[in-house]
Image 1 (tube, rainbow over the protein chains, first blue to last red):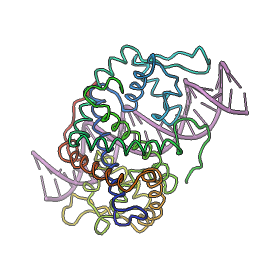
Image 2: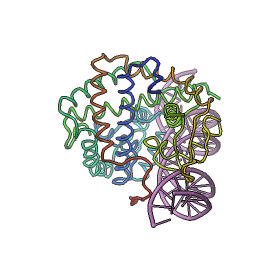
Image 3: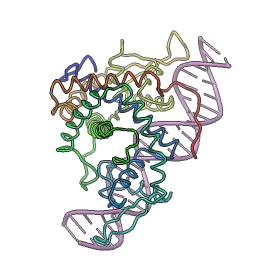
Image 4: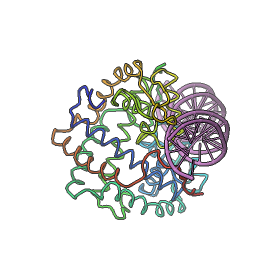
Amino acid sequence: MSEAAPGLSAEQLGAYFALVEVSSLLQYAVDEHLRLEGDLSYVQFQLLARLVDAPGGTLRMTDLADGVVYSRSGLTYQAGLLDKRGLIVRSSSPDDERSVMVAVTEVGRDLVARVLPGHVDRVRQLLFEPLSGADVSALHSVLGVVRDHMRAAPPRSAKPRARRKRAG
Amino acid sequence: MSEAAPGLSAEQLGAYFALVEVSSLLQYAVDEHLRLEGDLSYVQFQLLARLVDAPGGTLRMTDLADGVVYSRSGLTYQAGLLDKRGLIVRSSSPDDERSVMVAVTEVGRDLVARVLPGHVDRVRQLLFEPLSGADVSALHSVLGVVRDHMRAAPPRSAKPRARRKRAG
DNA sequence: TATTGTTATACTCTATAACTATA
DNA sequence: TATAGTTATAGAGTATAACAATA
């Protein structure tokens, strides 16, 4: 693949491979930490972190899902787990009886607070330790451009009800 | 989390989030393509791509695993699937009777060749379309530094036989 | 004894489809 | 009819531990 690189320059290919490897290793390390420290998967951590950041610690299920989970049932499953552990509470929305509002509990906040320092430590250690301020700045700016670009058009989160054709 | 960012600068946090989101979206898109086009998971594609690149299209199981899979049984499982489809062949090594050599078949090479253009297309479209040459260069260089750093010390691939303590 | 790989098994996670209820 | 969410279910993938065989 590195030799037969149809349509990508050597530099592009190198950047792509580096991105894949870096995010894979980072993901693995961070996953491991969250699991050991808080018995949380990365997805669960992301969901909790979102809620902690949200006004009133509350979001609709659908809004909570966006970008983190790619199917409704997947979110229901994860929310069920978090609920069972008392990290979130679900209640039906007063505005729209179809909607379910999800709120972090105190226990949930405490867990995030307990896990966050170590999480951040790992990220700093693995990702930022070897980088200068200029490097970080460049990384931020370039990845920001890519993110905005990706958000614009392509396959997004758990919205569509339609189904795709199967391969086999 | 974005407010309560203990120990990371705003720029670092932004870079981290952008990295996570970009690699997640890219991963999702590329996964989907490989599944539809070649009925391959990304892991399977990585394994095949490695073999295609390897001298003689052949690698030991353990060497094949490195960086792609984090447990021996996981590799055996994936190799079993690829074998069943005739994409690889396994045979015991002449040098070391314990080892198993894995080789891509013609069918395997053909599949990679068939899938690669579309794969590359998606990567170019999603990742590189909005980037200048200088951006790509910067991305490559910064991520290269990070990758080398990560490779140096931390948790690596499917080597150790030791086990870790459990959380709960 | 250490290493290579396989197997059995249990578990986590995800997605599809069918369903209920509300707008 | 469309949207929000749940449930049932099936499938893919992973990891641990026990195992056999070779170094």
